[in-house]
Image (cartoon, rainbow, N blue to C red; front, side, top):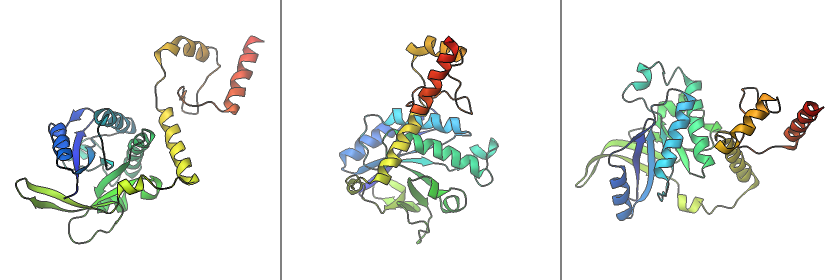
Length: 248
């Protein structure tokens, strides 16, 4: 045994009661540590809240392996609330995307955990640029991406039954990979996406309200003002023209 993936949390605010103990004991035992969050999200906004919750929870922790987004519906919560993993594919992918993009914006290694059938028929794996962890019990891994969970009844002496997994990737080695233009572009895209989701500061409230009231800022097609994002030259000249017209 060289690593462990510990459940950190579930839903929008529930911490696993054994998380701190498991984390500390795993570190003391010299194991590499990653975490997984069991999602109860029913919307993109809930998935994003879960991502922010997890980031706050693991702040200061030394993780050697990714943060995993577990999109199972093992207890039927999603289906009871009108979300079916297999028929609501777009929603499932959008929720996964919100979680993954936020994790990446925080500089965290991250991935999606799901069964083989979900990873093959639901998740658009080519669109995420993250790791995938396949739960496929037996002797075959049909995905062969990053991790493979091959049993739910693995025995560890003195500890009872566990899910057991194989990890194909050396994350310490991957951290030292040479930076390429493609990797840099992806990193910047993730960083900018994270900025868009940030809320503006309280100290700018009066100025923001004035600018919106006077038509200097109208937001994008969805009404998002993106106050924490960078301003392009194109946006700047639009602001200046609106101001000039207003003064004139």
